[in-house]
Image (cartoon, rainbow, N blue to C red):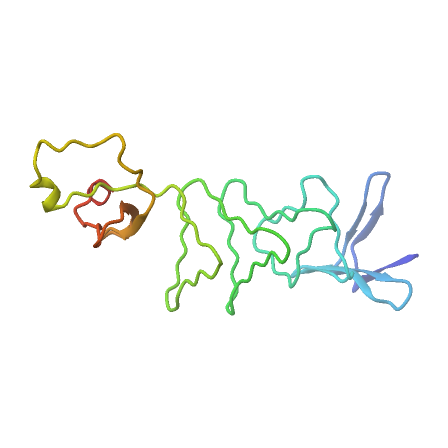
Length: 196
């Protein structure tokens, strides 16, 4: 297809060289020859890309100096989509919410330091067949009855291994496991709470 270049208003110059085409004007448009649809336009305030699809083929992707506003971002078929900010944070904002959906696979959120899930006016709802909390520390539990027991009783090597634990919460919100007993074994004076 042929493209028609249109320089609106008056222009100072149009320079076509071996390496570049340069135009100095108030507004620059590139239209499709059939239908006259604006494919690209530029003026002092904004640049508009009117094509149905913008494809960036460079290996480093697209680099935006400031914010990006778009109704749709999609990777090529069978390709991963990666939004990355190598040296700063990545922020997604929307007044009516942000939805991240993995219809046929896993959704992973990893970070080097802390991961915060915060809801200022609502709730955080976890809904799954299985919810696992890995690598929780195991606190120690001592009851007054065990401390008053006879000193002649020593732990037996044949004692059954602890397999059932109680999930406990420290006053500061830290989670830990405590060996399950007939009653609750969670203690605010647990070594986990004191040293966290």
